[in-house]
Amino acid sequence: MLRIEGMSKSFGTLEVLKDVSLHVHKGEVVVIIGRSGSGKSTLLRCVNGLEPIDSGSIWFESRQVIRTPRDLRDLRKQVGFVFQNFNLFPHLTALQNVALGPRVVKRVPKREAESRAMEELSRVGLADKCDSYPANLSGGQQQRVAIARGLAMDPKLMLFDEVTSALDPELIGEVLKVMEDLANSGMTMLSVTHEMGFARHVADRVVFMHGGRIEEEGPPDQVFDHPESPNLRQFIGAIL
Image (tube, rainbow, N blue to C red; front, top):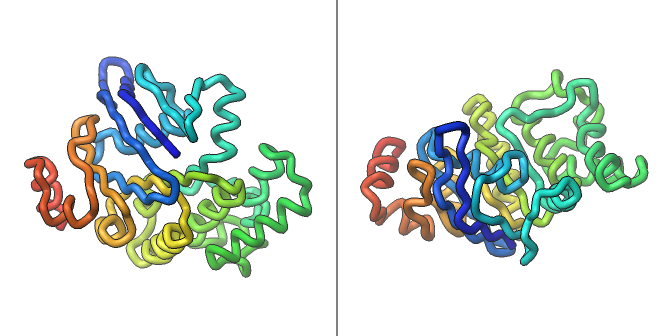
């Protein structure tokens, strides 16, 4: 479904991604781990066109992403993105936040978009909060609304960028449960996370990034129990 070939990205003189290649197959859950500054979040932002790449190529469903405005718009109709800090519109209710994408991007009629939004809010366990504004929701609830907003676009691929990093510890579990349910439903997912338990139990494949490169990847048991890279061994020892 997603193919990245030789992708590099710099910010000024700082080279953040260095010749990165990665494939994600339909229905696969790929989790990216690594230290802060290793390029994980930048990789996701490049995939969704939020950052232009300097070299390499990105293919989605056998079609190269050319990055014209129309091409990026078509891509974002099919790829959902959930950010670290929710990014909900504070003046809109949960229902309105979730319905906005289908209405604006896909030109779905208001009633149909709101019906779909209610389905997705129910899916993440927040149907009873449909009329609540973000300020009246906990961090975990806001993040679940953000996930519902991504799902309302009926994406083929979901990108998750450290979606629990801004949450209090007691709220992390409710968001990870939603993500696990999505994985079990067959959703194709590419997730950056520091939650190693989630990576071990939910991922089909774990990718370790170091210094802007993919240094090691494989099934969770292999990556966590038999790491080959000294940097990966050190990383796992530090966090576990």
